[in-house]
Image (cartoon, helix red, strand yellow):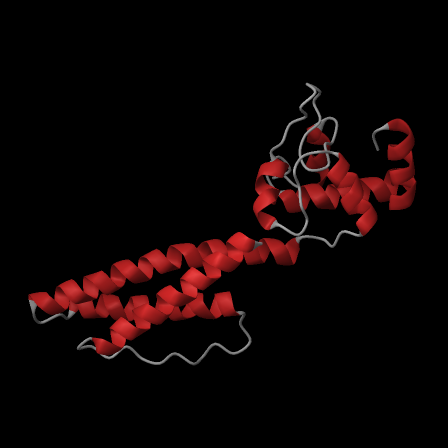
Length: 192
């Protein structure tokens, strides 16, 4: 979570300085206001794409070498910021699509030892690709045995944490009826 916050702060600072530099240039970069109903990350992404279009126009229509260099520099900065903003959009999309986990489900997943933390999206990708450390064929966040069972919930079962968590929730509901019954089985047998 801290990584995504720090990346957002860096992105906001970059956008601020890009706009500040744009306001000092010879070409007018417009004030962008058509972003109602979007999240902050989506607004930033939209603004950066509009600025990128204006920077390209500046490169294309530069009259002097100094203007050309300035617009190219702006374009390079905007592309750099777009790259990081795209990463934030991916994290935000993943956060919205992750099914909610109750405390019982979190406890079972914690005991599986894959390093998955439902509150920290930076742990999801590595946990989704985690094979069992004891040499069995168990795989991923829920340590499904075999991992290919999760293919019933999507072709991306081997890499997508959202697919794996959805499979985990359905598996517990189908096999044990409730999470508390699955946790009780885990307490007695050491697995669910």
